[in-house]
Length: 184
Image (cartoon, rainbow, N blue to C red; front, side, top):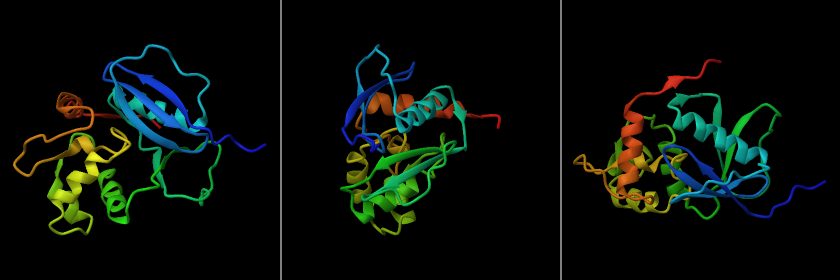
């Protein structure tokens, strides 16, 4: 039986934030901050369940290195998905190769760390690309999981954020408290 490719909205709530997650059976399509939502989404497809588990760990300041963030740019999945794998597959279709390089570099910036727009661009092979990095962060469809809140201005100012500057500051403060490894 073929999995449905219908996009459905799922809702996640924690003490930090409420999110609307658009997903089909294979990939996460987008994540948006919302003001509030109390109803739990059920049943959850495996990819959404993995994302929600990751978000639970994040909200509880737990660092589980067992998750893999997979950027899917189109076509069918080109990697094996074992039943126990903790893979979160993001639909990155529509992004340019330059933006993808930025996002791939950004997922390596650890919780509690920040990087400037210019430094992120330089690490991604885009010299003098600070403005491009800022525009790419504004177009990030996956806030929190692709942690654009960790990108700040070169002078140390927080800069803008899709969820609002107050949420960006809250996320940075949350991460500054440190994360504990998940026993494995």
